Length: 255
Ligand code: NAD
Image (tube, rainbow, N blue to C red; front, side, top):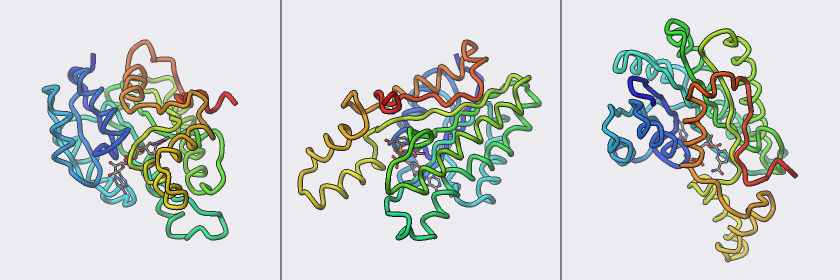
């Protein structure tokens, strides 16, 4: 039960972040959402659980906006007990053609933002001697695919950051872990299916191909399933899960 706890989920106006926010809210947490697009729609989805729900529009590539968001959270809610670093973007290109500004944006949003939220939220967690930091990495935090150099580097980095923070908090009531999802059918993945279908003209076939290449179950993981894993990591039962990179990937990483 997360009553009385506040969760900040970055990039929670869509996809996995919204699914995690929903599950944490249903468990009783108050929520600070973040992300671009239709914030009101996200608030309405999460608010049905009855807790306090706000949204902050910080751009996760900008450390100053991240600082404002953390200050806003502590002002409005009094604490950040659960920090879910989920905001992320993708770009697919061979490394020699990879636009340097895309590389910088991916490292900033997928990796550096988690460094900033963590360093800013930790002092409050230490004061209360309780906290959960959950970093949404990827199967690409533990294995690579061609064409995704920046994404793979950022997600391997995020797994490493999770381990370091777990060690620095090992004797406290704060845990830090990474979740490594396989394919989840969100706008981020639909864009990759669309890019492949632009060549073949077969969207349904490309969706099947995408799964068949990596995910032995041939089924997508759902945002709600990832939310339930995050909820478990918030529980007392998970108090000694520290520095883990926990895959939920339809068997991707078993190969
Ligand atoms: P999505 O595109 O549906 O959602 C991304 C969210 O991040 C949105 O709310 C968006 O507004 C927000 N966002 C993007 N750039 C931002 C920025 N600069 N500042 C603040 N918010 C920003 O994507 P998703 O598939 O739900 O991905 C969520 C996370 O899960 C990402 O870190 C992604 O790498 C990871 N992931 C996704 C999959 C998958 O198959 N979909 C698999 C493994 C890991």
